[in-house]
Image: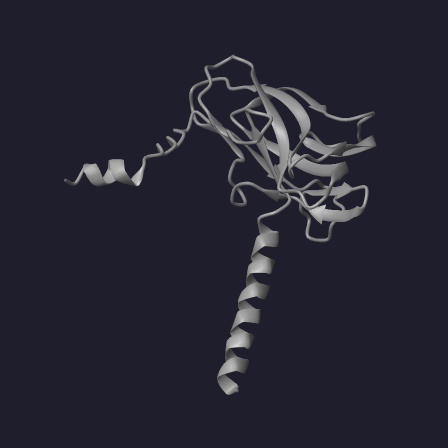
Length: 191
């Protein structure tokens, strides 16, 4: 009986830990070169406009009607920034900050939604990037980027990189994706 109680206690602890951990990886925000939110590392020539998208992924809401964050550029010049949606109002007053409310919410499809279109350029071939931080006038006590859905209270947005790291890197040596190989083709290398 004691063994059964111990097994149940360990099982419940494992499930509780995994539920908590999965919440950390939800409600993400990043800057990508594609609207699907899959490519955030590029090489760009100086003085060449680059189109990018501010994308929320793995959202715990079916829509988004307000969001707030600050973009901090490193060796990047922002040419244009336009929030998506019906009647967006950007109430931020500081440079690089965005506190956006929408007249009608943007629908989240498969946990992903593009919340803004942007264009930027670099002035040279040195490594560059854009980080996401909190706004000066913030909604949450933790001073973090945030969003709200029609039926979702204000929630924290987690940037896709470690704090203080860029969410998009430019001219900084992108990691080459791994090629998919079958187990048989790998085994044949050792015969």
